[in-house]
Amino acid sequence: MESSVRLHLSSSNQPLTLALSRKGRGNWTERVITFMASAMLGISLAHAQPSPDPALEARVKALSSELRCLVCQNQTVEDSTSPVARDMKDQVRAQLAAGKSEAEVKTYMTDRFGDFVLYNPPFKATTVVLWAGPFVALLLAGFLLIRRLRKTSTAPAAAALSDADRERAQAMLNTKDVSN
Image (cartoon, rainbow, N blue to C red; front, side, top):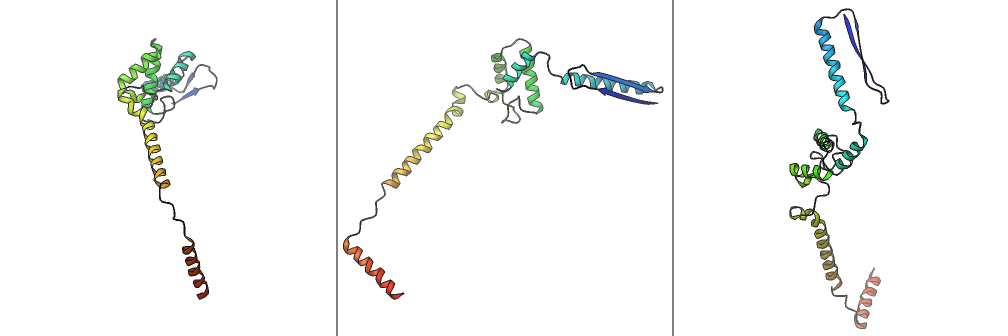
């Protein structure tokens, strides 16, 4: 009473074929378990296949590249492998398939997750620090550098030695040379 499930997948775009073979007569429970396992495997593999609409997939990919993964935070939804990113990408796909525009999908995502979900957040009062912060920091650094350079350039220059001071210094150096 041996049963086996063989699954044949091809690398081309051929449909999935699932072949069940049985040797002997199994009991009813074995057949039900085998059928359920085969059905669940077939459903999961069918769900993992890409959408048959390449135009929709291109739109999903483009829009997912503009959204930030909430888990990874430094990756786009398109690049991330986290479950949250997959859910967000599925949500984008579902909304685009329902006929919504990219702007409507972005609005939905920002309403749900805030402006943080966008890689290029809009310029408004709540995001002014994001946009102006780097420029303010650069201006501050430039101001401090210029101030520092001016302080060092206005430092008193070494006073020029008079002829008498030079002769005295030379005399001191000569006396040290003689004593060594």
